[in-house]
Image: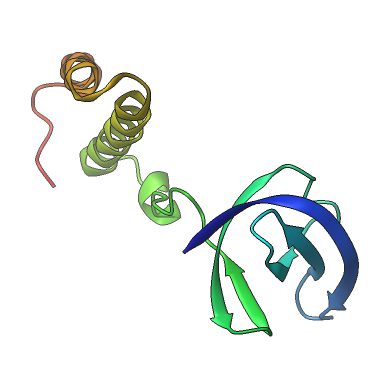
Length: 132
């Protein structure tokens, strides 16, 4: 995975699939010297000075954007109103909070916040929450 800042936005081509949605493929010149083409569903999705993460799929021809935090709760699981989905949401919140605080304030503060979140989550979800 590579990370760089967008230095210049170039030409955009539209792929309009009649059975799907439009995809706008835009050429981007990056601070690290790479020139890549990425697709988005929004026409003006990229801005100069945005930082992007990407991978080279095929050298000189194909690239893909890499999301910083690829973990997203399963839509169907989030729709289910059961104790397991509540538990999964609590653990996801803890993971995101831990990562953010760890980056900014270090391990001790991240552990402290995690303990506080767990105590709060127990009150919200209830002590009888099954482990999933």
